[in-house]
Length: 115
Length: 107
Image (cartoon, rainbow over all chains, first blue to last red; front, side, top):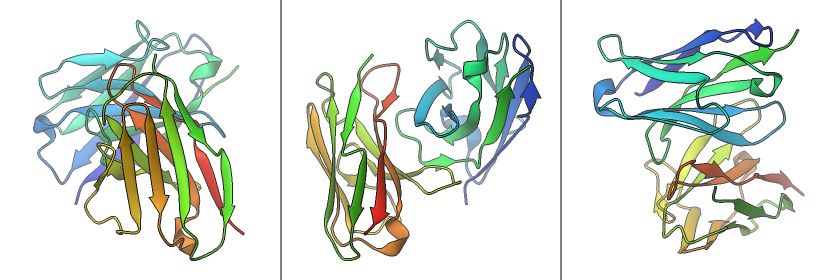
């Protein structure tokens, strides 16, 4: 059974940094692209970033230059380094398995950017 | 960016009803269209991929169709556990974009 468990979300001030993690199990992690999708409170879904099995990375324009996605295949873990955080980055961040469609999701971790 | 427009934004139906949601893309996306279900407080769940392929384990009352710019998602006989918000998502072009969601309620 695929399991994805996000961690690292909490309250941070505008301009601050945060690193999210997603621990994966139940599949061959290194063989699959992984993605981050976020959802602002009461809003819809927004794709944030994808990293392929070959470490190619893709970003939404809204986070490009501020967020960095990476992975540690030896630890079956996905990361999202978030810098220069803004109030509009406040959201639940989900990690999801897949590149074009997201067939498994974590439970999400809440990031709140506020002073 | 490709805009995905879902309609309706909300929908009220009775148990046993057939329910249809549409999703229109702002440009041709072939069949690169997925559908997700999100229940309150939960993560989304993939139901349909590539416009019409049912994800493993998803009940057959769910179906999808369409290509190009116009897509349809149907629940053939609404069940109480289908109460959720449904999203379409395109992956023809980056950035991958979602529709605004359709909130389905029981009448």
